Length: 73
Image 1 (tube, rainbow, N blue to C red):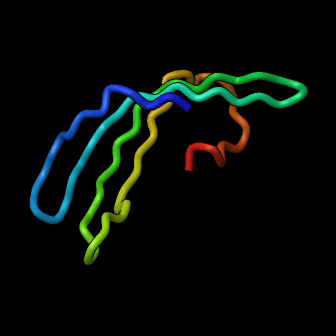
Image 2 (image 1 turned 135 degrees about the vertical axis):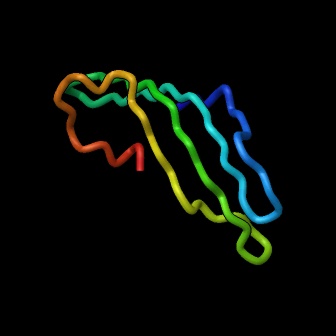
C-alpha cells in the first residue's frame, strides 16, 4: 500500500479531517489486482490519543464487479 498526497482538510482542538490518495496491490496465486482511490479520515481526540471516528474510501476503478475487500476496512 502506498499512501500519498495527505491533506488536512479541517482542524480544531478535538478533531481532524484529512484526505489522502492510495494505491494498493493485492496478489493471490490466481490473480493480481490493483486498487486506486482516495480516502478521507475524521479523527477525534480521546483522552491522550486519537481515534478514527469516520473513514470513507472512494475507489477509482469501481466499475467492474468486485470481490469482498477486507483490505480497505
